[in-house]
Image 1: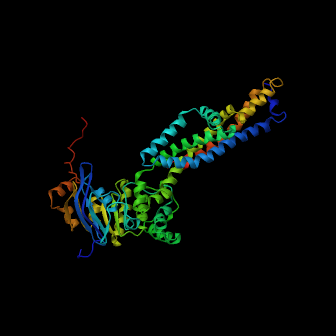
Image 2: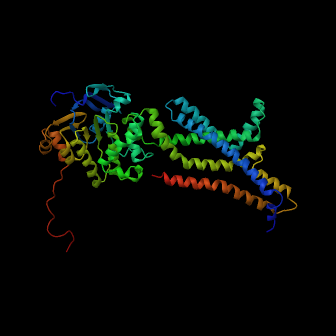
Image 3: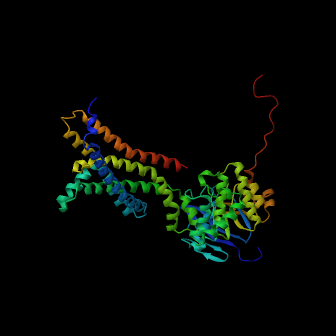
Length: 223
Length: 261
C-alpha cells in the first residue's frame, strides 16, 4: 500500500495543521459565544412568561430542525442578497455555529434548571435566601454541574460539523485535505487514504480529550 | 404558658388546595422553650401546617406571629424567614456545597456574617452532632442520618427562634432514626422552641411538652400530658389513630408444624 509518502512531502502536514487551526478557531469562537448566550436563553426559557417561552421555543426548534448546511447557506448567501453584507465564510460559520450552540445549550440549561428538585428552592427559602441568592448559590451551580457532560458532547459535535463550512468556501481541515489530494492526484494516486487517515487522527486528538473530560465529569457528579 | 407572649402563634389558619380544605381554621401557639409535637394520619394537614407557618405556602386566611410580631402571609422578608427554621423529610442539603458550605451559607449570604464567625459557629454545631470530621465531605457521601443531622445544623446556624421539623426521620433506615432523634432530644433539653411533626410515637412521647392531634384540618385533641395522651387519649379519634401503631400479638403458633407429617 503505497502513497504514505504524500504525508511527508513538502508541506502536507503543516498545511493540514493550519486547516485544523481553522476548524478549532471556528469551534472555539462559536463555543465561547454559545455558552453565555445559551445560559441566558436557558434561564429565559425557564421564565414564567408564556410569550417569552413560546418565542424562544420557536426559534430554538427552527435552528435545530434546519440542517446546519442550510443554515450556513442562508446566512452566507442570504446576508449578501438581503442585506448586501459581504460576510467571510468563516464569519458566517461562526454565526451559524453560535446560533446552533446557543439554541442547543439553551435547551440543555432549561432542562438542567428544571431537573433541580423543588425541595432545593424550599430549603433555600426557609434559610432566608432571596430568589436571586438561591439562583446564584444553589440552583445555577447544580445546573452547571449537570450541564458539563452534555456540553462537552455538544462541543465535540460542533468540531466535527465544522467540516460543512468548506461548502461555503472556508478552507478548514477537510478542505485542505482535498486540496492536497487533488494536487497530488498523479504523483500519489493512492494518497487520499493517507491524507484522510491523518485528518482522522487530527479530529480524534481534538475530540477524544473532550469525551474523556465528559466521562470524568459525569462520574464525578453522578451522585 | 404563663400568659407570656408565645414564641410562635398560629391564628385561624385556613388553607385549601382546590376544593380540598387542608387546614380549617387552626389556632396553635408554642411557648418559648416548648416542644410541641403534631400527630395525625397521613393527609391530615400536618406538613401543610408547618409549610404555612414557615411561609412556604400562602395562607387563604389567618395569621402567623413570631414572638408577637405578625409575619405576613406571603412573600415574607428574609429577616422574618430567619426567625423560623425548618428541616424537611427528604434530604435537602445543597449537593454543590460541602457540609461546612451548607451550614455556613445562610449566615454568610443572608446574615452577612464573616466567614470566621460562620465557621466558628458551624464548628460548635457540627461538633454537637458529631460531624465536624465530615465538614469537607459532600452530601452525596453521607448517610441519610448524617445528612439530616447536617440539615439540622444548617437550620440552627441562622439562629432561628423556632425550629420546625417535618417528619425528619421518615425517609431514614430504622438504625439511623435514633442518631437524628437523639440530636432533637438534645436540642429540646437545650431549651430550643420546636414544633415537630413525626410518626415516631415513642420519640414523640419522649420529647413532647405538649401533643396536638390533627385530623382532617382540625385539631382533634390537645394534651399537656404526653404520657397520659399516649396511654389513654381522651377522644375516640386519637384512640383510633394511636391504635394503628399497635399490633395484636397473634395467638402463638398452633402446635405442630404446617408441613404434613
